[in-house]
Image (cartoon, rainbow, N blue to C red; front, side, top):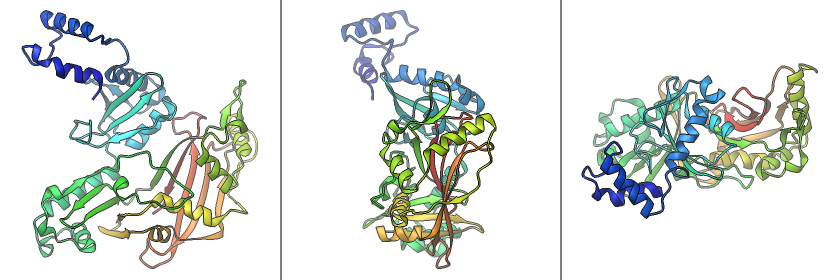
Length: 408
């Protein structure tokens, strides 16, 4: 709650309606006097004011117009008629506000009063906090999570044998939970709303509570479930590359002085032997439509054990991994320990890491890391592909934003 909200609550008793009615002359004058007495200036600096500024910037931007974002009567909400998902909205926020640290509040979580939509909270430089509700836009993954939650809650109180839905029955059976001992309140949506998770070359950490989508509580234990629908793939949405920038003439350059501004990205580039100068050269070739298109090429000399630690950190441990499979079945795996996270990743080979640089036909840097995982196919060794991608998703050339996704 910001200062203005607390102030209004404190003085509410002074107004006949329990709040200051700005259309009522007496209420307005009383409210103005109370503001003066408490030395509060409504013109700038409040969360509401900051949010309105941010919303104006978003809906009037090229990026916002391209996806149909609009202003609403509620000045803390953005209309989302084309139902873009939260990842796309985050991309827009990052491109407009220089990669702010964003926290997402699920419906009815924390300050979010909406029972349906996510709230996005971040800070504007030199001004203060912003809270924006994206009114719509649940992607297919979120819809699947909510649908699965509803089925689990509906089954609470029933015996396992009486449950007809296969997915619901499979979850309770695999986790060893007796649904007859539960109520619907014991099963709730967590939303995996914390976007601050970082990858690490130190290996996997206990992330169960942090990344769970659905939580089931029993008298003796709490179960954290990370839910993926059949198309889910994103495992990390990072920030912008600080060292690939424009010079004064508008040419893309590799600024070595900024290479260590983001230590994680610098470590990833060093470990994977990514040539930053080739990225800059490739982007210039894209603009000028010159040069030869780049093909996939193997990267030699990569420390595969270090890469495996990085990938395992994207999984973490301390939760149940639940993935929708074709045919209405689920893949369920208990990522209980760090060792389980390493098993999820699988084994890397000397030729596991490949790269394709930007060039005349593409402005994307992409790294592919292929592993052999026995876990994700239940004992059958199959390729698991990670993609580390640096691109600008808003139609611009820069900044490049790093994301990591997988095919499982």
